Length: 428
Image 1: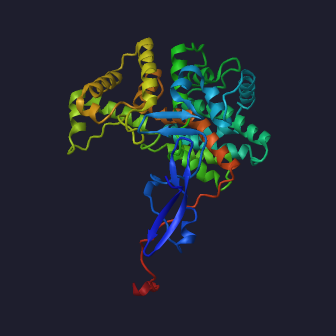
Image 2: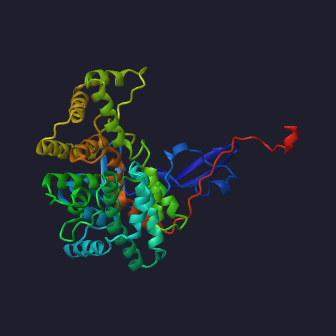
């Protein structure tokens, strides 16, 4: 293959270099296009064919169902590593030694205290406020209590900012849930691991001990790992483009949380449970709804099946299905919503229509089931997604700043009115 691409516009031909990734991905480098062609640009709504950056963090091949963090397969990481190890890997590029991991967690615990005035901000929200709106606001508010900007040329400053948000963010997540449930705010314990502390801060009642269930710990640990990064998706791209203006880490993360909120992105697992609720209310006939999903004239959409990136199978779903089965089996939850979910899963895996089109249950389907079984309210599902995605966002922000990428500034093709004369108000 040639190392250049040729573009012909009218009588003129222009040449642009090809950029090749380590997994043989190929891109046309068009950063000189506008200058070379006197103003011609490309247009790509949704940026489905546009690479915004070169990144060494996550490799994703949707056709083959491959997901790797820093070169490690998601299957091996989910089986052999815990979430904090994966977070370290994503952010710093290598798996930590025992000493590095112990120091990382100790430093995170040292930063796991949130300024008491943040509680006043939480108190100002009504109980029915959506937790994603609360979390985004609280994350942004951290900037006010940590006003110094990060010196990205200082490894020490960068590290301090990272452990600070890794320590405070789980507290904000837990407080967001406890606010919704009318429970007093909780700080957890320094004696617990990262994931164990998250569960304790979320669920411990003020007059009771909280019994940590190893199957729940394992399931949550895996869910957080599977959600930790996913290449240049909507929220990650948002974090990078906000950070490209040299906005701080907390502000950039707050913007990412808002992007994740949408039902086409992080809100998908909430949409799954809302769909299951609607099916249950209509009698719970899963065969009927599978038939509706196959009917092109029917407006019903089957949520949690297939994936816009993975054209074969979602590798994360294969991993988390086992954890979902373990959670449901161990907790012995009797819930008609989960019965509907199991019915839909069975239909999809056996119905030739869905098998032929590779419309398998995806990670959103199983994560919603697990969170439901754990007793996490449906409005909190996307908050849990954000908790998992935190290290990926941090890694992407850090990479973008260290590489001194230029400020994001997409172009447009204007299709509005041409020059018009102003008409005075009494003549309109």
